[in-house]
Image (cartoon, rainbow, N blue to C red; front, side, top):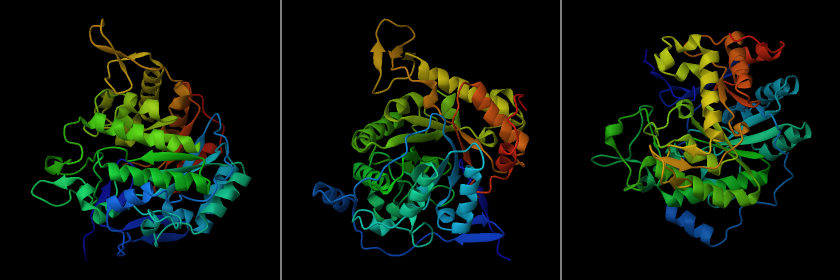
Length: 420
């Protein structure tokens, strides 16, 4: 019998070879990454089309105003195309305190979840997962006053990297670098690629998504890092290269009226270095309406903050992360040097002036998936309570399988006021 190797990444994705199984109600939905050939030939061609003022989409639809407290669950690209499954998640939102759904616009494959005739994007439309009726589905959610967030996986993009290998992270000795799961990343410094991200953002907002959520906005990790070569980011720190992308994205997408948010590693809430991936909280805050650290307790290393078993400290980890992130957002000075910051020459140690932001700008991703232990309703509820106790009122919940078993039980009961 052939052996199958199982991986998990920071998103809680279980990847089996190149096959992803999404658990469904009463069965399994098997997804094979798209491998069809395309006629799309170069990133330069995409940029040239943009310069020629290619129309992006139809007139933007009416959008729902961002709720003061956004309480959301994630819906994968495959699930949004499976009506019975997606309807069960809509019902969960309808019958609980939840008021929002985050839907994949583009997932880890680099493929898009809805049809478009846009010449820059049409060859990236998935024929395996997605919703041909995405616009109608969004309209139906709006009719229920459900806030709709579209998730865009950015620099992890094996599809684009295959089409434009010269823009991908390179491997020493030649070829495209890949992580341990066999997935390629686009180099953060590849400016032709930035334009395609902007174009996808504009088309998605025009389709009806109220907010655009950018994930994998980082340099790669979890691979043979000593072999990675960033030919488009030479001469810049990873933090600077990523912040330059944030500036470009904000300047070119904000005029549409879209609300923008970004996902960061959970430890970006407590670390002041870029963790080797370019992500620093203060470098993201100026360019997004909301920033979401992925504070899944299971993804913290043993020994974090003295916790030998991090899964026994779901409340403590989320509370520490959110307290720290909120204080950093509200602060008017920082030790972090960034393009948007002003150096305070008289300070020692060196400090920089920064804009103060409301702590409500921080919205955590919380855990409702079983890894490496079963996450119980008490553990899920503890994360929500920790968020509230940090003075925050919004949260996102992640479960790659879209089951939310513990969350369903948690939200059916009165909120606990006692940390677990």
